[in-house]
Length: 185
Image (cartoon, rainbow, N blue to C red; front, side):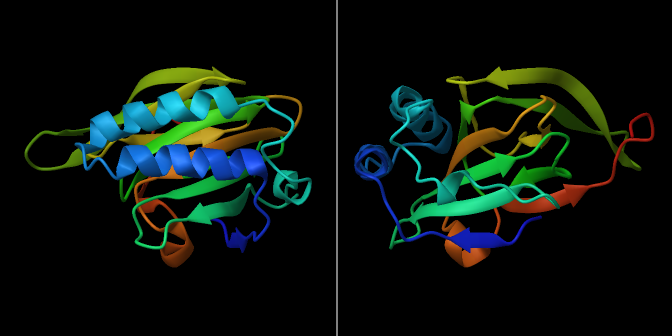
Protein backbone atom coordinates (compact mmCIF):
# COMPACT_ATOMS: atom_id res chain seq x y z
CA UNK A 1 0.00 0.00 0.00
CA UNK A 2 1.24 3.49 -0.74
CA UNK A 3 0.87 6.79 0.99
CA UNK A 4 -1.45 9.07 -0.97
CA UNK A 5 -0.07 12.31 -2.33
CA UNK A 6 -2.60 15.14 -2.48
CA UNK A 7 -2.46 17.18 -5.65
CA UNK A 8 -4.27 20.49 -5.97
CA UNK A 9 -3.48 21.32 -9.60
CA UNK A 10 -6.13 20.31 -12.12
CA UNK A 11 -5.54 20.59 -15.84
CA UNK A 12 -8.38 21.65 -18.15
CA UNK A 13 -8.48 18.12 -19.61
CA UNK A 14 -8.68 16.54 -16.14
CA UNK A 15 -11.53 18.94 -15.26
CA UNK A 16 -13.42 17.72 -18.38
CA UNK A 17 -12.82 14.10 -17.36
CA UNK A 18 -14.17 14.82 -13.86
CA UNK A 19 -17.35 16.29 -15.37
CA UNK A 20 -17.76 13.29 -17.69
CA UNK A 21 -17.30 10.80 -14.84
CA UNK A 22 -19.67 12.77 -12.60
CA UNK A 23 -22.39 12.60 -15.27
CA UNK A 24 -22.09 8.80 -15.35
CA UNK A 25 -21.88 8.28 -11.57
CA UNK A 26 -24.85 10.59 -10.93
CA UNK A 27 -27.05 8.23 -12.97
CA UNK A 28 -26.98 5.74 -10.06
CA UNK A 29 -26.54 2.67 -12.26
CA UNK A 30 -25.31 -0.75 -11.03
CA UNK A 31 -21.55 -0.87 -10.29
CA UNK A 32 -20.57 -3.03 -13.28
CA UNK A 33 -22.44 -0.81 -15.75
CA UNK A 34 -21.05 2.32 -14.09
CA UNK A 35 -17.51 0.96 -14.46
CA UNK A 36 -18.11 0.16 -18.13
CA UNK A 37 -19.47 3.65 -18.91
CA UNK A 38 -16.72 5.40 -16.92
CA UNK A 39 -14.17 3.40 -18.92
CA UNK A 40 -15.69 4.74 -22.14
CA UNK A 41 -15.23 8.29 -20.82
CA UNK A 42 -11.64 7.68 -19.66
CA UNK A 43 -10.26 6.12 -22.86
CA UNK A 44 -10.12 9.27 -25.06
CA UNK A 45 -8.02 11.10 -22.44
CA UNK A 46 -5.29 8.46 -22.15
CA UNK A 47 -1.90 9.22 -23.67
CA UNK A 48 -2.62 12.93 -24.08
CA UNK A 49 0.09 15.39 -23.08
CA UNK A 50 -2.30 17.79 -21.31
CA UNK A 51 -3.99 15.43 -18.82
CA UNK A 52 -1.37 15.41 -16.03
CA UNK A 53 1.04 18.01 -14.71
CA UNK A 54 4.76 17.16 -14.47
CA UNK A 55 4.39 16.71 -10.69
CA UNK A 56 1.56 14.20 -11.24
CA UNK A 57 3.92 12.11 -13.40
CA UNK A 58 6.60 11.75 -10.70
CA UNK A 59 7.43 8.31 -9.36
CA UNK A 60 9.08 7.12 -6.16
CA UNK A 61 12.15 4.84 -6.28
CA UNK A 62 10.89 2.88 -3.24
CA UNK A 63 7.34 1.94 -4.36
CA UNK A 64 4.67 2.83 -6.86
CA UNK A 65 3.32 6.29 -6.18
CA UNK A 66 -0.30 7.36 -5.84
CA UNK A 67 -1.32 10.90 -6.84
CA UNK A 68 -4.91 11.71 -5.90
CA UNK A 69 -6.15 13.89 -8.76
CA UNK A 70 -9.77 14.33 -7.67
CA UNK A 71 -12.10 13.16 -4.91
CA UNK A 72 -15.77 13.96 -5.31
CA UNK A 73 -17.14 15.90 -2.32
CA UNK A 74 -19.93 13.37 -1.74
CA UNK A 75 -17.51 10.42 -1.90
CA UNK A 76 -19.05 9.13 -5.14
CA UNK A 77 -15.74 8.67 -6.96
CA UNK A 78 -12.03 9.45 -6.99
CA UNK A 79 -9.49 9.74 -9.77
CA UNK A 80 -5.94 8.64 -9.00
CA UNK A 81 -2.76 8.49 -11.08
CA UNK A 82 -0.45 5.62 -10.20
CA UNK A 83 3.17 5.99 -11.29
CA UNK A 84 5.15 2.76 -11.55
CA UNK A 85 8.88 2.50 -12.03
CA UNK A 86 10.17 -0.78 -13.55
CA UNK A 87 9.54 -3.80 -11.29
CA UNK A 88 7.22 -2.02 -8.83
CA UNK A 89 4.13 -4.03 -7.90
CA UNK A 90 1.12 -4.26 -5.63
CA UNK A 91 0.28 -7.04 -3.25
CA UNK A 92 -2.50 -9.41 -4.28
CA UNK A 93 -5.65 -7.52 -3.31
CA UNK A 94 -9.28 -6.74 -3.95
CA UNK A 95 -11.15 -3.43 -3.74
CA UNK A 96 -13.69 -1.48 -1.70
CA UNK A 97 -15.69 -0.38 -4.77
CA UNK A 98 -15.94 -0.57 -8.57
CA UNK A 99 -12.81 0.50 -10.39
CA UNK A 100 -11.75 1.50 -13.89
CA UNK A 101 -8.09 1.58 -14.91
CA UNK A 102 -6.56 3.02 -18.03
CA UNK A 103 -2.93 3.05 -19.06
CA UNK A 104 -1.73 6.57 -19.79
CA UNK A 105 1.93 5.71 -20.45
CA UNK A 106 3.88 2.46 -20.77
CA UNK A 107 2.21 -0.81 -19.86
CA UNK A 108 0.73 -2.37 -16.76
CA UNK A 109 0.88 -6.12 -16.13
CA UNK A 110 -1.89 -7.81 -14.19
CA UNK A 111 -2.50 -11.28 -12.81
CA UNK A 112 -6.12 -12.03 -11.94
CA UNK A 113 -7.18 -14.58 -9.33
CA UNK A 114 -10.20 -16.51 -8.18
CA UNK A 115 -10.80 -17.57 -4.58
CA UNK A 116 -11.59 -21.31 -4.43
CA UNK A 117 -12.95 -23.07 -1.36
CA UNK A 118 -13.23 -26.78 -0.64
CA UNK A 119 -15.50 -26.15 2.35
CA UNK A 120 -12.63 -26.26 4.84
CA UNK A 121 -10.08 -23.84 3.42
CA UNK A 122 -9.87 -21.24 0.70
CA UNK A 123 -7.01 -20.66 -1.71
CA UNK A 124 -6.20 -18.38 -4.61
CA UNK A 125 -5.94 -19.70 -8.14
CA UNK A 126 -4.41 -17.57 -10.89
CA UNK A 127 -6.91 -17.32 -13.75
CA UNK A 128 -5.44 -14.88 -16.25
CA UNK A 129 -2.36 -12.80 -17.04
CA UNK A 130 -3.03 -9.55 -18.90
CA UNK A 131 -0.78 -6.82 -20.28
CA UNK A 132 -2.60 -3.50 -20.56
CA UNK A 133 -0.88 -1.07 -22.94
CA UNK A 134 -1.17 2.67 -23.41
CA UNK A 135 -4.75 3.60 -24.20
CA UNK A 136 -6.29 0.35 -22.95
CA UNK A 137 -9.01 0.42 -20.30
CA UNK A 138 -10.44 -2.26 -18.04
CA UNK A 139 -13.03 -2.15 -15.31
CA UNK A 140 -14.41 -4.37 -12.61
CA UNK A 141 -16.65 -4.43 -9.57
CA UNK A 142 -16.46 -6.55 -6.42
CA UNK A 143 -16.76 -9.42 -5.83
CA UNK A 144 -14.38 -11.20 -8.14
CA UNK A 145 -11.83 -8.40 -8.44
CA UNK A 146 -8.76 -10.06 -6.92
CA UNK A 147 -5.53 -9.20 -8.72
CA UNK A 148 -1.91 -8.08 -8.57
CA UNK A 149 -0.57 -5.27 -10.78
CA UNK A 150 3.04 -4.44 -11.70
CA UNK A 151 5.24 -2.60 -14.15
CA UNK A 152 6.91 -5.34 -16.17
CA UNK A 153 8.35 -2.91 -18.71
CA UNK A 154 11.69 -1.13 -18.95
CA UNK A 155 10.37 2.42 -18.43
CA UNK A 156 7.97 4.37 -16.27
CA UNK A 157 4.30 3.40 -16.46
CA UNK A 158 1.43 5.68 -15.51
CA UNK A 159 -2.14 4.50 -15.11
CA UNK A 160 -5.30 6.34 -14.16
CA UNK A 161 -7.64 4.62 -11.74
CA UNK A 162 -11.17 5.80 -11.13
CA UNK A 163 -12.77 4.32 -8.02
CA UNK A 164 -16.35 4.42 -6.78
CA UNK A 165 -15.14 5.62 -3.36
CA UNK A 166 -13.36 8.56 -1.73
CA UNK A 167 -9.71 7.50 -1.83
CA UNK A 168 -8.59 10.79 -0.27
CA UNK A 169 -10.45 9.76 2.88
CA UNK A 170 -9.74 6.00 2.74
CA UNK A 171 -6.08 6.36 1.68
CA UNK A 172 -6.34 3.32 -0.61
CA UNK A 173 -8.81 1.38 -2.72
CA UNK A 174 -7.64 -1.92 -1.22
CA UNK A 175 -10.21 -3.85 0.79
CA UNK A 176 -8.16 -6.99 1.54
CA UNK A 177 -4.61 -8.20 0.92
CA UNK A 178 -4.15 -11.90 0.15
CA UNK A 179 -1.19 -14.19 0.76
CA UNK A 180 0.72 -15.33 -2.30
CA UNK A 181 -0.30 -18.73 -3.60
CA UNK A 182 2.36 -21.29 -2.80
CA UNK A 183 3.18 -21.78 -6.49
CA UNK A 184 4.11 -18.09 -6.98
CA UNK A 185 6.82 -15.74 -5.85
